[in-house]
Length: 152
Ligand SMILES: [Zn+2]
Image (cartoon, rainbow, N blue to C red; front, side, top):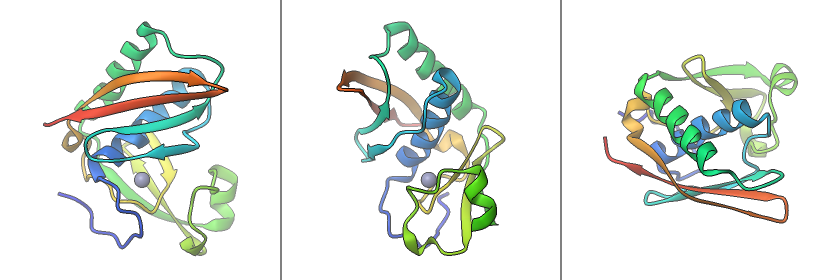
């Protein structure tokens, strides 16, 4: 059940969809920016955030809990197209490829997250499986979160 959308990105859709939820959860928990860099693969992935410190064990537990709570709600993942002029005021478009054009694709995860993206996603969040942070570290202003998914 994967939305077929032409894209140059070859992400693993469940992992990439988990990345959307993790980013929104980081924004809500810490009022930080979404990850500025990431590496998404089927077995394990990592997201980097501009941050001030490493996370505590308790915060890691909270992140695992919150991301899985959203996954378990089986929220629909949908797309919307809005004009670039409108998108500029609502979203950071820096990570979109230049060829994204004047109609910007917004990926919504229920009412939890909305983010411009040209990648591949699951159609409902339960398809992601169980999210688990493997480790975190903090080096020179960059918090790195490594995570994996356990099958549904
Ligand atoms: Zn995406």
